[in-house]
Image 1 (cartoon, rainbow, N blue to C red):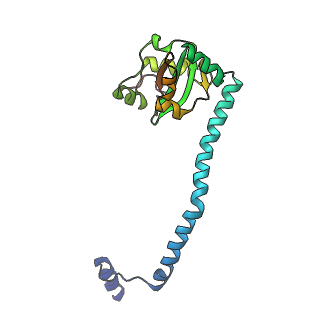
Image 2 (image 1 turned 120 degrees about the horizontal axis):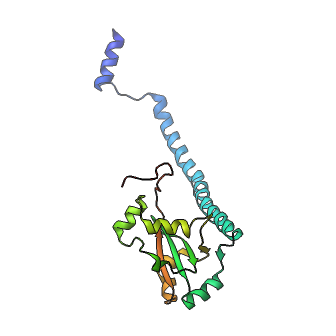
Image 3 (image 1 turned 180 degrees about the vertical axis):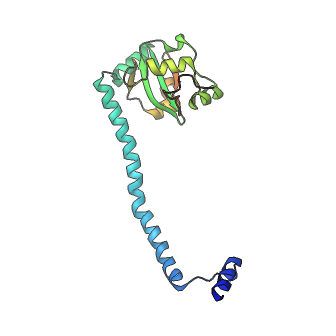
Length: 188
């Protein structure tokens, strides 16, 4: 019967005292947590950054092996002459990669241009010409466009487009959630 009263007091919130070991080890646990964040945090950040850098290098090496990496000197000359099209591969955070092709992509169709269209394509909505550009030009295995070593910062700021006024630029949106191969007719 005595145990039932103790349980009732705890349930009603009348007996909520902390025991001595909990009070003793709380500061120790807090200090241990802070130290672990200080020690492990930089390694976690370094690991996160190195995987992104590693993936970019591996991608660039793969494109070089396929003969699909254009050197800056060649690209600069072609942009000065207004030859071909620079394709910005755009994702959620803006330009992700910069490609170049000798084709005049802008004359072949209309890419998503409004915020609404870009948002829809990011979410996986079909857009015939954008999908065609992704497959024909930007596909890492079968595409025709060449990747470049252009700084994404220069592209995002618009400095590069301003430096080459005769060049043509288009933006192709890479969907965050591409339609699955199992569903050939997505309901949208």
